Length: 315
Image (tube, rainbow, N blue to C red; front, side):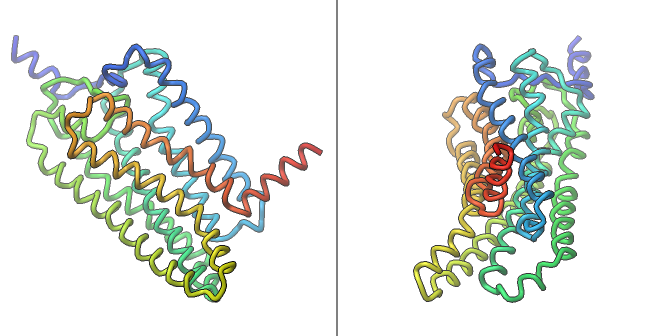
């Protein structure tokens, strides 16, 4: 009997997602802010794509990178929210094994792509401020396309071994995942095999993607700030800072919550499990929601096009 129980999860056909363990009674209420964030993310990012496509004056590298970010945010949020809301609303907790691995891959892949796009946007700001006369000759459409392809391939190829390794593990403990989505760390905890290679590779990916990206962005903005403070007048300094402010807000909204979550998970094990799950879920949804809002409010080209659109419709 014990043998049959042990082998039942060797190759599970489905996993069970618990949602937010300990807060099951509040799932309906929790779904309200999550659904609101998802709606804002969908509408906001589609609006960014529509405005850039229909406004020829925005056909420039900064806005191309912004479109890449919008597409990434749409895929990232749509990889998580529909299944999460089905758990909260309909108690639909089962997920196919292959679908679980696919979801895990998309979450990690597009999170890495988002980080890479921030590096590309930092490069654009660096060239625009530190070498403005050569901006159009350096960041050509062909070069921007190469950057986008590099960001895509880097993330896709680096993340690919993670679900491949996860598929090979035996799952002889349980097929219950105490989260509302298929997270890598959750699947590592379910495997009854030596998963050190996967853990080490996960740290390697974290360093190759997030750590190196943060270092590059920091270096870029160090040079940008030096160039800004060397400008002759305060007005010129403030105007130049304004062109970078929206990008800085977006970077902070992406990396600071991620750092907070990572530190809480690593060094504060007394925090209740449902708090970790809730914070991790919110972390994946805040950037897709905030990015179009921040760019819509603080980017002059997009804000002006929105105002003209609504003014024209109102007239």
